[in-house]
Amino acid sequence: MAMSRGNQRSSASDRLEKDVAAADALELARRMAPGPERNHALKLASALRCSADAQGVVFAKRGKPRK
Image 1 (cartoon, rainbow, N blue to C red):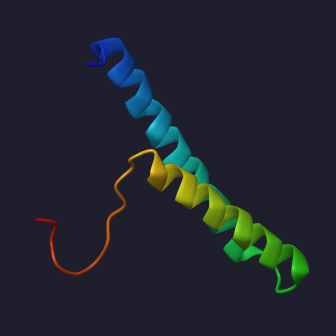
Image 2: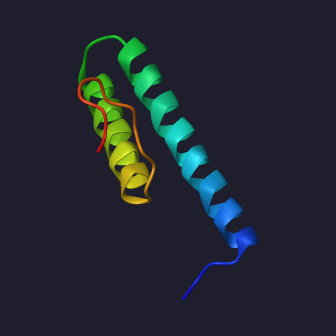
């Protein structure tokens, strides 16, 4: 089954929104004072990142370029 162009664009924007949400959550969690609330926020940010990654968002990583 092929996706129509409209669906591809909306799914791409959904992926980008999830990527932005994950990055924002991680940034906010990193700025929190050490403690149980920060630990919980970091775990939630990690879960968001994993969810966004499962949707196909490619995150830039340092090191060797992708093949």
